[in-house]
Amino acid sequence: MPARRILVPATVFASVILLWWLTHQAGWTNAYLLPAPAAVIEALVDLAASGLLVKHTLVSLQRVLLGFGLSVGLALPLAVLMSASRPARAVLDPLLEFARQVPPLALIPLLILWLGIGEAQKLGIIVLASFFPVFLGFRGGIDGVDTKLVEVGRVAGLSRREILTRIVLPSALPELVVGLRISLGYSWRALVGAELIASSAGLGYMIIDAENLARTDIVLAGILVIGAIGLLSDLVLRLAIGRAFPWLSPHLEAARA
Image (cartoon, rainbow, N blue to C red):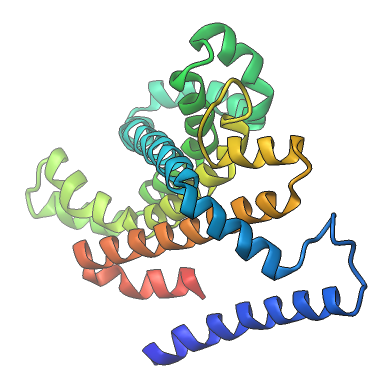
């Protein structure tokens, strides 16, 4: 089974690359709009040799991890508060629902005015993009806890805090896992928008700069790197969750399928 998990995705990606190469060889694609795989690989090698690829990747990775961490740090306690307090839910729910409908990129002008054009503005975009999957996933998991389990805890003499930590939170973990994975993916998706304004480094900046220079090969190289790192970060997240909470392994496999 482990070999199959590696073989099947590798075969899929190899087939896509082969189809890409065949369409280029047959002259069905414009070399400017879609360069050959060899040209993109050559661009990757040149970027790696010059050190630019490592530089841009590390900057983007730092931004994504910080933004994702801030989202998780804000979303988890807020979800617990709104699930436990009806007044908090009545006050905050309409505001959060309104904010959830606004695309993060539409807030870039305000973020520039409020936070400037430094790192805070870029982190703000990533946080806005990745906050709600974690928040809604965890809150939905808390709200979906079996009330019979809570009643059993009360009959057993557990305090409110013990019911929360020993029954409610563990029961909500499967939904939280899904929210974390979606949120991490949204963090990478928001990266290019976050690095759109006044950036001098990062994979998003590299892609936008290459577009201005009509270097489609570098644009594709940057996209491939973001996709590869995104897959790797999702794998690391699943492995970390599976090691910390072994009973969640079936939920991780189901989410992956």
